[in-house]
Length: 190
Image 1 (cartoon, rainbow, N blue to C red):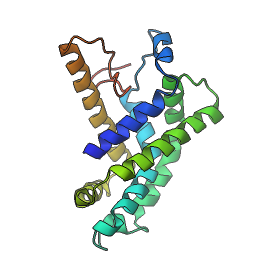
Image 2 (image 1 turned 180 degrees about the vertical axis):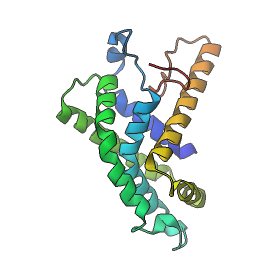
Image 3 (image 1 turned 120 degrees about the vertical axis):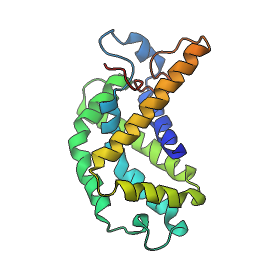
Image 4 (image 1 turned 60 degrees about the vertical axis):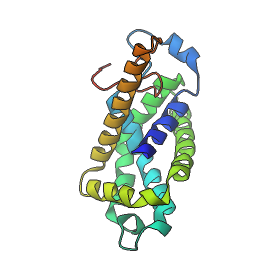
């Protein structure tokens, strides 16, 4: 589970490329946080490389029968195939949060930057002792549509954002919803 928090940190870092100036400039009807659907789309776009990176990082730690060791397992192709339908929402969410405008080329470059930041970070954070548990989680999601794993990750990130916002409120800090992860807390709508 700790590894998904690293993914969230990468999403947040990439989404905040344009800094707090954009957040201050955001209008009342455009929140400075990503909705669950937007986070799910971004996760769905990033999952193929994340799965590949996880498989590479865990290859030496898993038995040959493990799902992550089977490069030809259908799950890998299904996740690559499901990226395309999520791409438009992921681009627009990234553009809105980062303040990049509506240029498809710029927004695609932003997503590529996010991918370049997250995948190596994810690989570096995976500990060999965790590979069995990670493989098991992926096996549990394997028969389900890719949107299920992306939705589960998005929900976890929204719960983390909600908890961080509550902690900030307890400590008396001003903290907009999902400020630390730039993700709208679970239960809040746009």
